[in-house]
Image (cartoon, rainbow, N blue to C red; front, side, top):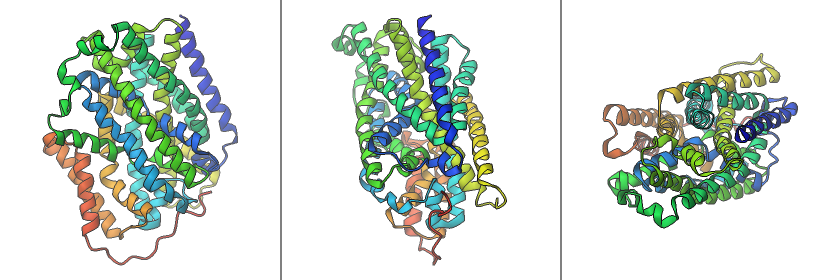
Length: 465
């Protein structure tokens, strides 16, 4: 009973903090990027909290339980991606001081078409990733509170949707800071207690099949493992929540340092969540794989501590879900509604619309969660609507090497068509995800097609603030 009280208090506290911080949010710019006032430490905490969601943590434990340490190696690409962004991309973000979304940046090179296309795919990828978090929320409430999976999804998702809808980025950042502290302490605690419960590291290793401890492991070949790394690298790079963390920093230097810290933190955290899957396998191989992390919590932790750690797991999930919900609403209003002609809408109306979209995307995410079982697989589906279409032209723009509208459109069409054909028609040959092949196809078309003459697009929305 005490554990349920702790979880309930945590949920109410998060909701109260989120609603309290919303009281000063009055414009779309405040809803999206607050006042660009955050330093490197805050950027590190909120970016880490956003990245280490249910698909990343519980999904990693699930896949390592099933297939072994190859999934840890694959997920390390997320940390490497963040280090790459910190070193190469973030230092150039001062050029986009007026931007509040991906579409604002894309519009500087590809005009209204670039803004709308990136906005549409940003909404879809955000809904898909929130779907993974929603699914994780359902599993957590099912495992710890005994709720039906659907009821758990609705209850947990309701909390996130409420404070994100009302508070926007300010509420997301404040709650992320609290959630980061909880997850950074709670998840390693589960691993330590699990290892002790089994009898030590040697006992854990003795109970695990050798195939789980070797590379390339379940990927069959080194090519397959390399493709898994590319899947996470390309699928996660500059997704809307991560890009917004760069935009809310007080300067490009703070954005770069915070992102670097997040990348360095991701590498050991990935190992910890993956090892939880191995410890659960050593303890009881008959456990349902998607419950690897919750099962270990229930089995090895004493009362009170279990309530605190369950709150940490909920924090992991909520911290990612709220970020993607916020980014989806911003992309919809700023990159789809505005350019399609809404000259009569007031700033207040934009804010109301953004909140309505947050609610709608949350409901769409529930559909993702109820139709795809594996958390990691939900992420892969979502990534397919991002990397093959947006990553190449977006990186080119930030780096100062954009091409013409013809290159953008041709690359996006070929990239997305290639990814979908690879997955749905060819059934993913060599265990390589279609988003990898699609992104490479986009890159080839984007670079090789002769650029058509183009006029300079208007830079990143001086009216955004």
